[in-house]
Image (cartoon, rainbow, N blue to C red; front, top):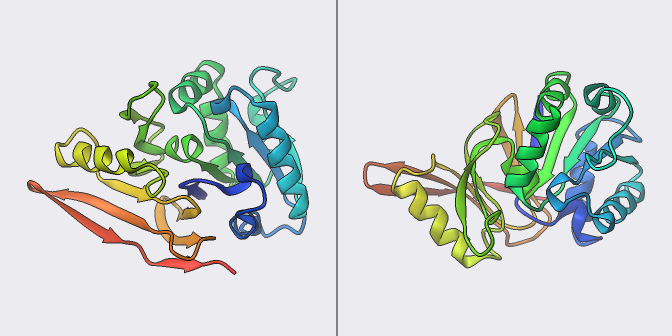
Length: 230
């Protein structure tokens, strides 16, 4: 079972992260993987749907979209399980989790995950898989949010591009409000296999990811070894 969590960019950012996009699709082992984009967190933004579909096609994939505002006929689980990769876009994590639970999409995602379909996502679409994450779902504020809990620990995206996020994430781990976890720069992906971190990869030469844990009243920060993608 595989989850690939992106700190930022990827499919939704145009052509800047082609290497990262190719990496995600390559994990399917398929020459033309079937890729389902789930844009719940952006309110099913039409612009995001167009960008992601174009990126998937450029890399030889076959795109489709699961919209909760115009859902497919029949079972969401059946629909998802027709694919090789599921990619969840960024936006409002709080709304994503609420809508998924209302529609039962969280259960459908779990079934797809257990069947070996690769789950991936960026920002909100990465936070959702962890126990908790740091989100800006409340306008003007960074706050902790409980998520699905399929991966242990917490996650904060955009670690290099949003300086206030870094300070808040460290403070919430230090005071015990959030479990330790990962602060991940834009353009970096953490690849988990069977719930364990297998590798970190990046499309950017200087991007980083940190594992941040609390030990007593101190924070222990460890830079992850990152494979730079060609």
